[in-house]
Length: 526
Ligand code: MSP
Image (tube, rainbow, N blue to C red; front, side, top):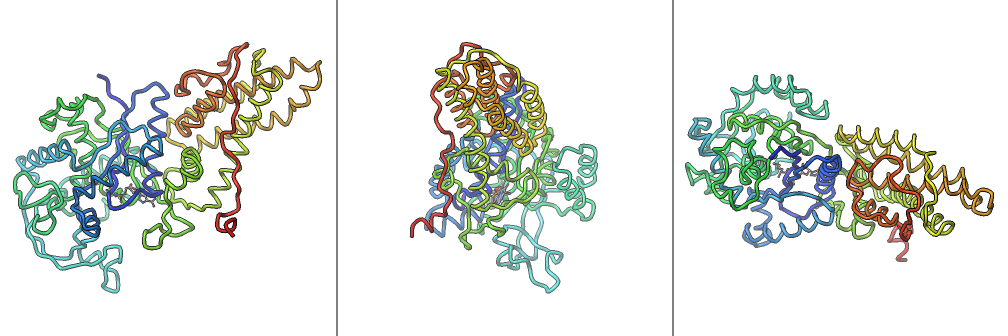
């Protein structure tokens, strides 16, 4: 079995419902996975949930539920949202699954046997909220700790530690020699800066079960559970390990491997994550993998954070953007389009309802929707939906857009890919205005010219459907249907001029993006 392209997302804490930030990351990963499949590659897309640890235990407790039941209930909702976003994930990992827990224990046992861990007494500060130990260095100039750490307590306890310090120079060297290991560049520089200016503290990989029992017991001392980040990061490899993956060192394969179908995906090609969890992925994770003797992922791709109206989204402020509400009102493709078009992978972004509505109306309804609808409606009206002759007038412009889109998709430049695709939408809309088929239709001497124009428009619509497949799968399928084409627009190789044959008859045009009243709801209600 040859190795598939493998993309993962962060696995989300199940301490609430998915919000815009979670959904954004998953949509980006889905676009990348779909693009690779469209290029004819096989791709494996993994997402899932991080269910152990203090955050989840506390959230369950606050609802008076036991954590296992709490996670089971929420996992259903998260998977429904994944389906609603039209994610094409090939697996969905939950860190409470037996396959994951057992492989994590195998990893821990092997590393313990090899002397990678040691036990030591810790005395100092601990943030329960962030589940992390703090040092004097973490104090602010006025002596307090950042409020993000919540309540900070003094603690004295024995724990197991993973030796990181001795890996520091190797890791710096590795990141310097592999410039694309962390992207974008400024995130790579951030990691290198951190590694060069700090001595790496060894990583505490346990929590005493007496204090926190919602976790995977350490196989060599069940008075402890595994630190949630060691547990969570492992998901990227426990899934392949539980599915007989040849890229995973055999000693980590799950003993019950026959119960899952085989895959060949490791090492991962892309771990897509948000900027806040960069250190875990670019520092701890490579060191864990090196200790396991497993090949390292090819890239950690880091996206920025969304704000709402210029403010951090938070449940307490009540300004959290709910992707489900947006999808129910505007459709899944409107959501997918806005998040990818608005925010490039890297910088931070800002969601405003006005910005969303404006892109919906300008780019989707009046741009793409109008182009497809008027092109196919004219073909229906003037030629009973039948293409009479082939023409290549817009071929050069379409071909340039196809080539550029492909190269941008290969570089994960999704926002620029959409901008490029929209240059064809705009060009084709201008073409309608310039050629004025509605006038040509009134002049019998222009019949040939009208046939040409209608062909160019229909063919541009077909090509757009193929280019848009990774981004707007619903819309792209609808365009194919309305063009009377069978099959899915899911193969990039179909993006070449001349796919529609003379004599082909299209289906029924229907608006793709209904125009919406742009007056905010509160005002209409009065
Ligand atoms: N469970 C850990 C990740 C473990 S990965 C081995 C975690 N979970 S999380 O639910 O807090 O965040 C999940 C992902 O969502 C992270 O990549 C995070 O950066 C991303 N986002 C959370 N809020 C976000 C925004 N407001 N905007 C964009 N992405 C954000 O961290």
